[in-house]
Image (cartoon, rainbow, N blue to C red):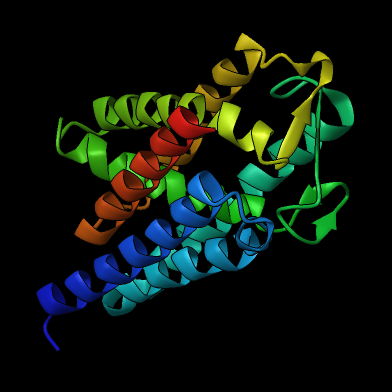
Length: 209
C-alpha cells in the first residue's frame, strides 16, 4: 500500500467516525455515543500514529513530551487555577489521574500537530510557523470550549470561559510548536486533514447544541 492510499483510508475512517459522532451527539442526542468519547479520542490518536509509521520514533518522542506538557499544565490548572483559570473535569473523558483525564494530553498532541500542519501551509519560517500554529490551536480551542462545556467534558467556575484560558492556550501551544520545530517534526497530510475534520465537527456541534 502506498502512502497516498494509506492516507486516504485513514482520512475516510476519521470522517466516518466523526459523522457518527455528530449524528449521535448533535442530532439524536444519544448519551451512549457521547459516552464513547474516550474510545473516539484513542482511535484518532491511533490513526495519527499509524500515519507516521515510516518515521514513528522521532514523532513519538515529540508526542510524549507534548503529552506531558499538556497534562502537567492541565493538572496545574485544575489544582491551582493559575493555568487556564478555575475549572474541573467531568467524567465523560474517562479515567483521571490527579483530577485530569489521562486522555487530555493526547488531545494536545493531536490538536498541535494539526495546527502545525496548517501553519506549514502558510509559512516556512520556523518562528512564524510556531506563532501561527499557536494562534490556530487557540482558535480551535475557542470553537471547542462551549461545546465541551455543554457535553460535560469540563466545567468552568461561574459558568464563564475566561479570556485567560485562551492566553494560556496560546503560550502552551507555542511552547509545544517550538519544540516540534527544534526536533524537526514534520506535520503530514493526515494530521492536517484530521485537524480540519475535528474543527468542522466542533463547528457543527456549536451550531446545533
